[in-house]
Length: 337
Image (cartoon, rainbow, N blue to C red; front, side):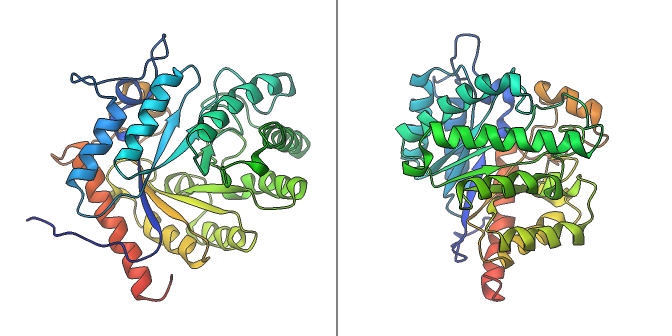
């Protein structure tokens, strides 16, 4: 069955990520800073995004690009320019490596890395940047007590406010910086909406506005240890504080086909929409056998299950886009947005 063209009538932008292409095969630069290319010489993320845009019956508005330190500026510029040629708004997901954002001794190194991403964003007129820059992935220890947790909160506030100040973000094209927490195991400290909120509260107090917001991911909410009503209540609170940023439509645990979400995506997408602040919804999938995610498959029972059912990952992404736009349009029809 061919799906006819679908118009997104919700007023909420629809986006994609490139994680379904694989970190090694699609996202990570090599030791020389070169981004992966296909046999035709095209950047893999560009080619994969083009394939989705050609196959999707609904217009894709935006893409969040994983931005790694050490990437050649020529390759980063080529990727962003080419993605814009597809009619996509480019956002960055700023990665830091080899530093611990919670350690004062690593502050200078973390600031240096983040400012490189900030300058890339400025160079291309990017208005939204995103990051998981509150701690390191699959590393570290949980806080021993509340005093230690509060110290880690305070250091994150100091770090991010410094980048805001040193990067002159208040006078830049970048309108918001959206921070994402990750599920327990991937992170040890900022593992839920409840635990991320003190960082956002502190940054709002320092800056005097909600410049820093949350990138809320259904998968990480679903695996956070908080139940659905607790997450919905926190999202409503985030809305009151103007902390709502982009939303990731991603299935808890499997991180594969959106139909494996057991209701989390639909419920939390609706909760975000009800705040009246939701700007965008992004479909995010991961290759079930991505070599770079082997540690995650070891850590999380159920991650790495093949949910493709004979489909390519491009087809899986398009199915996710169709599912998401149907939900968004029905929010409009029901008066939720």
